[in-house]
Amino acid sequence: MSDTILVTGGAGFIGSAVVRKLVAERGARVINVDLLTYAGNLDSLASVADDVRHVFERVDIRDGRALRRVFDEHRPRAVLHLAAESHVDRSIDGPGEFIQTNVVGTFVLLEEARRYWTTLSGAEREDFRFVHVSTDEVFGSLGATGYFTEETPYSPNSPYSASKAGSDHLARAWHHTYGLPTVVTNCSNNYGPYQFPEKLIPLMVLSALAGRPLPVYGRGENVRDWLYVDDHADALITVLERGRVGATYAIGGGNERRNLDVVKGLCALLDELRPDPAIGPREALIRHVTDRPGHDQRYAIDASRITAELGWRPRETFETGLRRTVKWYLDNPEWCERVLSGAYRMERLGERVAS
Ligand code: NAD
Image (cartoon, rainbow, N blue to C red; front, side):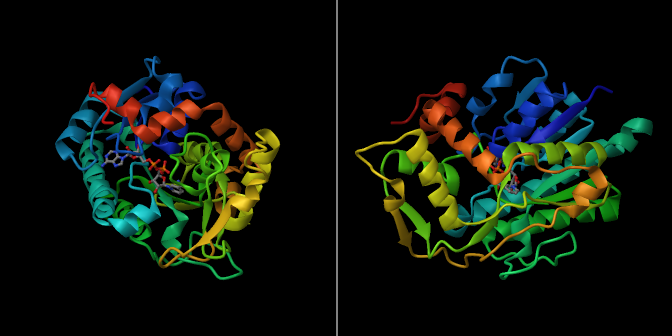
């Protein structure tokens, strides 16, 4: 069997990094299953658009019949499941989509993967893997000390993290009950190129560039453990290739930063790379706004299991990764304009762009 990997959510931020890596560096054939919601953009896959090893399937993971056709037609060796609703603020405003996609969608996908897997025999059945990609937010909030590990009890606080926790439990249960060879990963906050400009880092870069105010929740003292997206993509491919069936892997960058310091760091980089006398030092644009309800104080990952067992460790420090990221956004204003307007998505669907 050729190495065919079914990636869900491959037009999103992390999924597109995984797809670009699998096709360009590993020579894998990728079946990219994505609904192209506001967060999915084929523009992020321009580098593999003409590669025969990249096959795009516009399919909703809640649609069992469509998934069945995809499994039977492409016969993947593994599934790397990233499709999700992923933005905490959106989950607070409208949790329904999060339950539908993250919980129901994962259930439907697991069922179709199981149906397909039971038709396999011999080496094909042995080699099959289902990697479920999740977040460290399922563990709740840390105080000033300590780290999340694979043994940390689940304690999700937002509709987003609760829906991801539900999907993690489904993946685990499908292994325990049916023997489906699943592996779960829980990763810290990602940043890097091609991230939709609603998340902290790209939102702040674009706002600071334009001289707009930089709203920071509360006092900006919430701590996140940042991981460069290509390092996460490497970790996921490593887990796909060598992860233990039934195991969980915590993935993190060892880069704890307060939100306020992240924003100040971005301001300093932009002042250096794109100084603008009309705007002046960008730190002056920072505004403290009412905190997000239920805002978790601190996330930090102890990634020693994946390092010890599989030899993975991040390559980028926060400083090198942040500089790369800011430069990418400076060099790719068109991508930002197009994903924000939905232009590319609409074009690809053959529809007119709504004004
Ligand atoms: P994203 O929002 O950028 O991309 C999600 C993708 O899923 C989009 O391409 C979207 O079109 C697709 N999608 C949404 N609903 C779908 C559906 N019903 N059917 C098919 N496709 C659908 O998200 P991301 O930041 O790339 O995150 C990817 C995964 O990694 C998610 O499961 C998320 O929970 C997890 N994760 C993210 C982070 C992070 O910091 N971004 C950290 C840890 C884990």
